Amino acid sequence: MLISIADGRAVELMPSGVLLLSLRPVQKRRMHSSVRKRQNSALHAAGFTSSWADASAGTEAALSKPRFHLDLWLGFIIQNWALDVGQHVAMLVLSADWFPANRPGAAEYLHILYNVTTPLVLLEMLERSPRMLPRLAVRLSIISVVMGTSLHLATDSITRRLVLIGYQLHLSVRENPVMKNIKPSSLVDAFELLFYYDDTLGHLMWYVPLFLALFLFFSGCFCCRKQETMPAAAWMLLVPNIAYYWYLITEGQTFILFTFTFFAMMATVMHQRRRGMLLDANGLFLLYSFSAALSLVALWVVCLWSDAALRRKHPGLIYVPQPCAVYTLHLRHNNQT
Image (cartoon, rainbow, N blue to C red; front, side, top):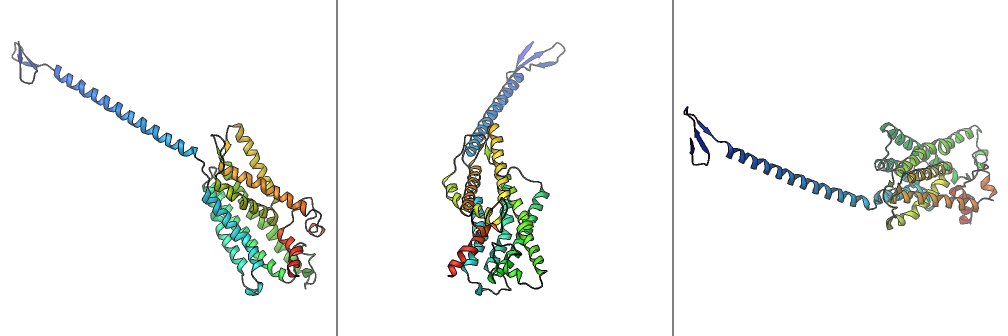
């Protein structure tokens, strides 16, 4: 016997007096709730998919824009020109009588600032490079740069004092008239050791980490997109950067190290092109700077190739005269006259 109750459920009266409730409406409500859950899940998944697609599209659009590190290169150029090249400019412009010979001068203070800022610039460059050296190698490189620039600071300070009393930069230590008249003669060995610390050991400790940082940064300047073009700011910074690299090769006597780094960069470019990778704006900036700097050095060597006085200091096949030696040999006498 079936009995209808208020909520629509059917009650069946069994002969034993037990009432059985029909569960069909409850099952229907459960089915409706499961359908709504599936619909909500589908809407949530669709919203997540659309947001992920928008985020990926935004990321792709951001990556498609040229990312030239203007702040890094501008700081690198200003620091090198103001503190490294500025030392020699200060020595030429400021009178030696303004500073006592037994105390640091303006050039030495600029050199001290250069010793402090150079490791910071190299660390920033390494942090932006995708190929990072091990932490121990980075620390050893920074220590090496600080020691190399410090050796250069001490030797340059003494060299500037020697120039004031007639020391000639285009001659070797023993061939200088100042050293021939020094007593006792064994002091010449001490000066040769001093210049060895600067020209050989100090330059290696200074420039090897520098060019290694530049090469590691360059090795990460590749992308899978089409060939990028340099922005206008990069073209404006290209000329002072080329001029500084020319100064670095000639005055720092880093022709072999610079050339080796350039060929390593070219080999990296050819290897990456086989994989479909092209240079970005930062890589083009570095490659153009190295190429043009080597061209300027070649022109510099050709112009001074037949100078017999400069060749006395560089008698070998690799002949790259230093600008300071050219100035003390040819230009300073003319200016004094």
